[in-house]
Image 1 (cartoon, rainbow, N blue to C red):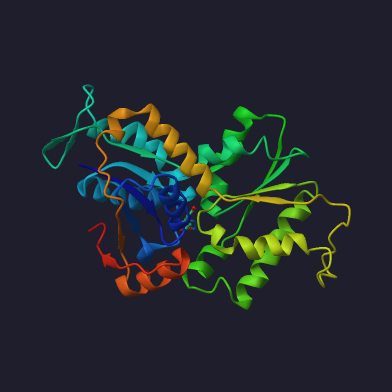
Image 2 (image 1 turned 90 degrees about the vertical axis):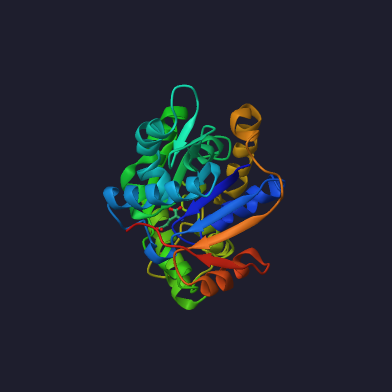
Length: 302
Ligand code: DGL
């Protein structure tokens, strides 16, 4: 029987895994964080694609039938090529997969951008939406292109937040450095468009700072930000985290796709893998998940 693989460059995918396990507790999961090579968001297309493909192949070899790229950067930069090229080489036209010379049932890889985009139009009232993401996700324009397809009337502004993932990976997201960079990026995106009332946290790491982000947004008019005054008539801003959206979308996908659902084992377990030190990963992941876990170190690539 097969598992659901959940992949991220580091700790961010845990926010997606947590929500998926609440929605679909019965399945067995394998989480892989490529912490040794995080952050992905400042790398080029070629590097992100190569790292993501190595992780996907590894998870397929560990008997995953379905892999969620719980990473916007990998979803934006690598998902399309993996779906249109690599999966066609693995799955044949009869729906069988060939992996390591072994015949298997079909396998698939899904991303996090589409389920998020679908939720945006019903949330914004002003029609002005901001996307906060890694530099790689922003440069891919994936959110803008996908939103233009389903809601061309919206005004979309993007902003890259290159310091947020390194702060979270370093466990510094509750410290004063994070406070500075939260204020900096939020001020910058709201200066681009003060009518924004919906901010997409377009990186799975960002929900780990959601409380602080929401707090800054709520009290921004009262902050001592004399250099960057916030217009007092600007709208209340709602932030969108992706966990629940992805979880509902996966539940719906599995209902519609028995070819994957029927392969999945239902022991309710989760195994954690990292490319970094397993104890350090387990310690940080336990804080993010508010429950102790143990992890194993694996190696990806050459
Ligand atoms: N959590 C990831 C994302 O959603 C990756 C961030 C990174 O490694 O830069 O984009």
